[in-house]
Figure 1 (cartoon, one colour):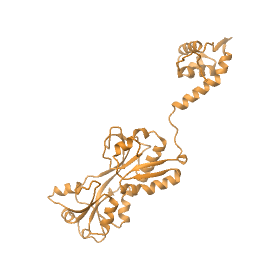
Figure 2: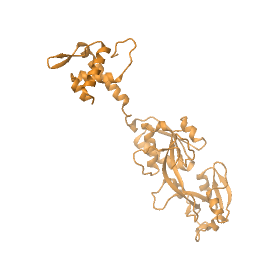
Figure 3: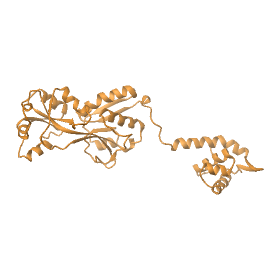
Figure 4: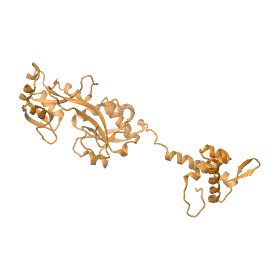
Length: 325
C-alpha cells in the first residue's frame, strides 16, 4: 500500500492528511478550513499531490470539483492512513487494571514492605487480579537498579539523587521511643537524661551504632548505650517488646492521618513515648525511572502505593527529578 509512485518516495504525512481532506470535501476551500490553513496553501498542496501521484486528483465539473477514478480508489486508503497516524500520535490510552498481567518489583525496608504488602494485595484483588508483587529488601543500589529495570519502584527514605530519577514524597514521620508495657520509662516524664540512661537497640543495614538521636543527645553532653544493632526494624521492635531495650519507631505527626507504617508497633504491644529532643523528621517517598512516568501500568502501581500509605496526592503528580524537596 502506497500513496506515492516515485521509485524512492519521501514520505510526508502532511500530504496524506491533505489528500484525505480533499477527497472528503471535494473542495480546496473546505479542505483548507478543515485543516485550519489557507485556500492558497491548500492549492499548493493539491498541486504537489498531483505531481507526486501523477493524477489530477480533483477536476472542475461546473461549479464543483469531482474526484478522478484514481482519487476515488485512494479515498479509503487515505482515510485509513490518517486514522493510523492519529492513533500512533495520540496519547497512550489509559490502562484497564482488570486486564493487567504484570509482576511489579518494589524495593523497600522490611517495615515499609510489611506496611505496603496487605494494602497492595487488597487493591490488586479488587482492581487488578492479574497483578503480583515482588518486594525486595534494600540490597540493591536503587539508582542503577531503577535505571536497568531490576526494580520498578523504590519506596522509603530516598537517599540517592540521580538526575533522571523521579521522586515523590508520600508521608512525613517523626521518631518516637518504643518500649514494652510497664517499662521504667513509662513511669513519669521522659527526659533526655532518662532516655540516654536506658539501653537501646539500633537499626542500621550498615551496622552503625549512632544516628540522629546520638547527635541530639550529644548537644546536651549525653550519650546513650546501644546494646545491639539489627538490620531490621521489625526485629528491633520485637526485641524491644520482650526486653527493657528502647527502640526508635516511626510515627505519624499529631493531627495527621494514621499510617500503616505505625501499625506494627501497636501490634507488637509497644508503648510509644514522645522523645523530648528535636529529631529530624523522616520523609518516606517513592522513586522510579522516568521511562515509566507515562506508562499506564506503572501509573496504577504508584496510585496503589499512595492509597496504601494514605497519601493525598492529586492525579499522578509526575515526581521531581533528582531527589526530594
